[in-house]
Every structure is written in C-alpha cells, then in structure tokens.
Length: 238
Image (tube, rainbow, N blue to C red; front, side, top):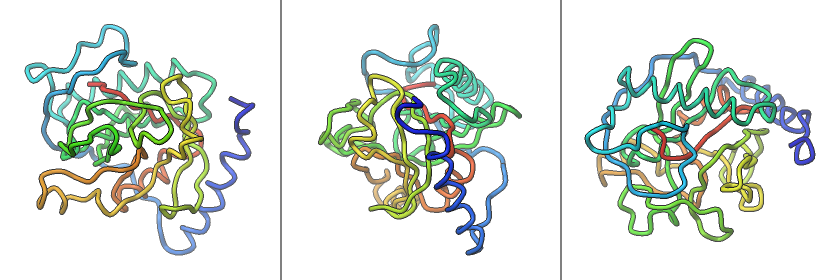
C-alpha cells in the first residue's frame, strides 16, 4: 500500500481542504443518532466478502435499518473488515459500510463508530452498470473499466480534491474485486440525484457511474468523518 500512496499524500489534501471549508463556514458536523428507515431483501450475487458465518440476508431475516440488531451486524462487519485489512488503514475509529443488500431508497451507507459503538446511516447511490433497468436494487458488482458498475471490497479513503464532481474523496481499492478503483476514478462525491425528493417523486434515487455518491449535506459528514486513511467497505453485508 505504501507503494501506491504515502500517508503524507493522503492526508495533505484533506488538511488543506479542511482548512478552506472551515474558513468558509462549512463547520464539521457532530456525531448524532443514526437514521431510521426500513428493510428489504437482497438480490443474488456470488463470492461475498462479508464475515465468515454471517447469514445471507433474506426477506425473512433482514432487520430494519436503525434497529439494534441491524446496528450490531454493521458494527460486527466493520470490526471484522478493519481487522482484515489491518495496517493498510491509518485511522480505525470510524468505518464506512456500504450495505448493498438494501435498495437505493433506504439509507445504506453506515458510519460505524468502533470507539463508541454507534451507527449513522445515509442514502447512497450505486452504479448504472450494476442496475441497468434502474430498479433501485444493485444487481451485480463489477470492477471492469467502462462498466459504470459498483465494485465490492475494501477501500482506503484518501485525500480530498476538487474534480469533475466538485470536492471528492479519492479511493484506493484494497481487494482484487476493486483493484482498478484508481484507474476507473471511483471516488466518493456529492450528487443532486441522491435526495429524499427523488424518492418522493420516483420511489428511488438516481445512479452514479460507479462512484459512491451521497447527498451534499450527507457528503459533508463523509469529508469530516470518513476521509483521511479510513476504511470504506462495500458488499451485501447485513
């Protein structure tokens, strides 16, 4: 990992942009209570990276997002994945878990705080190539360049930078299933199509080109709490 990006490179942009945002009045949000929506079933897919022994999600077994049982599963997955990638991380206080066993109209990006045992949940888009018919469910993962699909696996969150989608968080894939993340320019960014107004109108949010897209207010949380050498893990999890 040190051959790909040095710690100074990862944190340099984060510190610089953090100072700029703070100066403009974009204050760091506090750690509040988790969001509360409902559960659904998972679409089928092979080779999960979820912890060994974790039961597959089904309509009968899925716990609603925000319930103690669901939060327990998210925290357990966060702890397991942080231990799995180990020294490749520079900060292990908060782990992002993107649970694509849930549909796009439910908050499915969870910030698991391993220090105080809390979970906060946010809306998250998946890639067009993972849901060609725009059903709102992720149908498949892919790491192929040009696929516009979401890739599963562990990502190291790196520096902030200003690019095509404005302020974004660079990601480095740590698994074989997401090894081309840098090549594909898979990042975290805000997007207009990730909003409750989209759900009210269409019953689901929009799709990205494979990136982890959040609403603008929620993305501020990612800038402050998930960037700078932490873990983002994506799969069908809980």
